[in-house]
Length: 449
Image 1 (cartoon, rainbow, N blue to C red):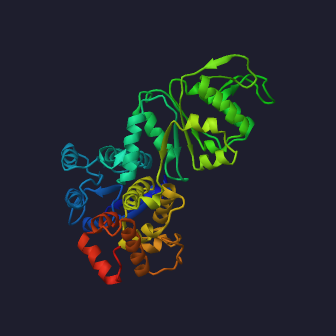
Image 2 (image 1 turned 120 degrees about the horizontal axis):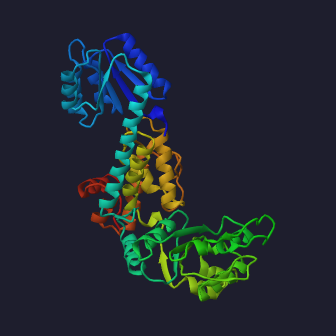
Image 3 (image 1 turned 45 degrees about the vertical axis):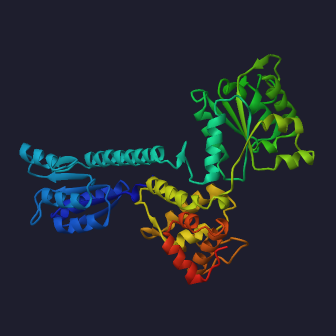
C-alpha cells in the first residue's frame, strides 16, 4: 500500500515544530498537511479524513483538547495524538479521557513518531478489512463472498448447497470472468470436505507434459530435470477437492488419463510403478462449449459424461444487470480500502454507462473497470467521464463518445427490454424509484414493451 495515500495532519502554533514534524512524516512517505491553529486544523479535518492528527496541547485560541473535541464532532473515529512540552499526569489523563489515542512529550523523537504512525495505520487497515468482511458475511445478497441479487444466481446458490456434500463430479460452465472459480470454492466450503484441501489447477496454463506431472506427480529421474519425487495435485487434494479450471483445453492423452482416474480413483505418477489411490471430489470448469467440442471430435464423450454429472451454468453479467450497481459499489469500497481512499459515490450517469456496456469480460472486467476508474478519479464521485474507456453496447456497439443523455436513455431502454416492460423490476435494476423511471420514460419517449 502506498504511504502517500495516507494523509496526516499536524497542528502546532510553533512553525519550527510544525515543519519538523511534517518533514519527518514526508520522509516516511506520507502526505502531510499542516495548520498553525486549532481553528485552521478543524477546517482541514472537516474537508479530509486524516489517518492521524497530531495536535499541540497548548495553542492560542482553541487548545489541543478543544480542537480534538471539535474534530471528533465532525470525525467521530479520528485518531488524535496530543503533543506537549508540559508533561504532567493530569494533562495526560485529561487528553486520554477526552479520546486521545496517544500522548507524546516534546522534544519528539522522529523514530517514535514513525513507529506510532505505522501502528495507527496498521490498526486502520485491520478495521477496514474487518468491516468489509463483516458486511460480506452479514449481507443477505452475499453467498460465500459472491455478491448477487439475481434470481438466476440465487438458483445457482441453491444448487451449490444441494450438491456440496455429494461426491459427484461437477462441471461449471460459463464465459470468462463469470466467477467459476468462486463457485468451485463455494461448493468446497459448503460441503463436508470444507476442512480438507481445495487444490486448483489451470489446465490451459501448462503444456501437456508439464500438466501431466502437475496432476499426477513424478518419480525421481522420470524425465530431464526430475531430480526428486514430486507429489501431484491429485495426491495433495486427497480427502478434499480438486478444481480443474479450463478443462476443455486438455490434450487427448490427458483426457484418457483423467477418465481413468475418475473411473478408478487410482493413478500412477509419471515414471512410477506404484498405483496410488485417492479420495478426491473433482470440480471442473470451462468457458468452452464442451458438447460442441464432443461433436467436433475434440473432446471425449465418455469424459464429458463423467465430468457432467452435475452441471452448473453461470449467466454472463449482461444477463444479470441487477447485479451491476451492487457489484460496482462493492468493488469501489474494496478498492478504496486497498489504496487508502475514501469510498467514492457513483453518479447516475456513470451507472448508466456501466449498465449500457456488454461486459464481454463479465464480473472480472467490471472489477478491473472500477479499479481503473477509481485510481484515476480526481474527485469523491465516479462519473461517466471516469469510464470513457468502456464502449456502450446493448444490441450492438455504440460510439464511446455517446452523450450522457444517450447513455441514460440506452440504459433505461435496455433494462425495460430485459424486464419485458416491468417498471418495478426495471427500477430495482437501475437503482431508482419507480416515479423517477416513469419520468425518464416520458422524457425520452421510450416504449415499455
